[in-house]
Length: 87
Image (tube, rainbow, N blue to C red):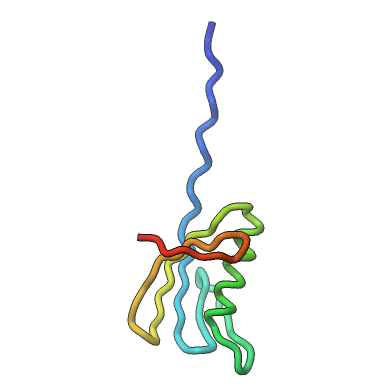
């Protein structure tokens, strides 16, 4: 008898590529995003990534490059809005 084979696990989602240019402008995977007047682009980016995680039903990894500070960070954004830094 042949044992049934399990399908391979789904591939891990690729990191969303986020580039922040100013307090109110950035890109997520090449798509421009802006913050409202007196808003902060960080809040907009995290909200969009949380929505993506909710739609996928799984945490969304993201690499965020912030030109304002000259640094980059990897985060994992969960459907409930919590975040954790990845190595």
